[in-house]
Image (cartoon, rainbow, N blue to C red; front, side):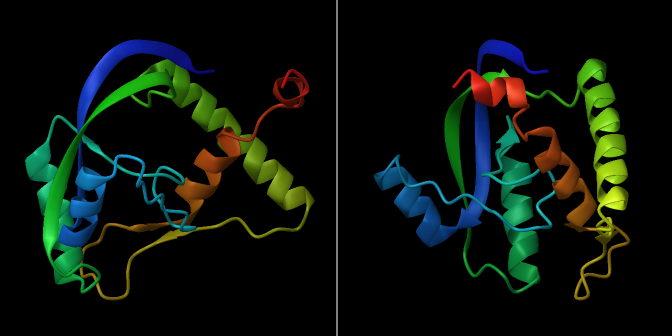
Length: 150
């Protein structure tokens, strides 16, 4: 499922100024987001080769009242095992995982999450991505054969 990437990328993370300082001073400090609406699943988000976009994201959070002092921190990232969503093979994996997720949820009588807009945001974008997060996290559930080899 994952392709091995040997390249390094430059990533930029939009954040609070105090978090930027902590990340620069202590490289082991990483605050992973585990919200049920995280677009691409749980973790820390970086904009590839785009510090301006990271800053715009932080400024958007400031306007929404969830961030006080926008800042950006850069990182050199080794992708290693990567689910590249630009690769059409991985899009197929994602579609198949959605179908499995939907089927499993329905068989267990679990409601399927829905992406919705933020109540304070006038944008038509559905920024609370409950469904997207659930499917991405579902993709990353280790298969039984994967866990047996650990």
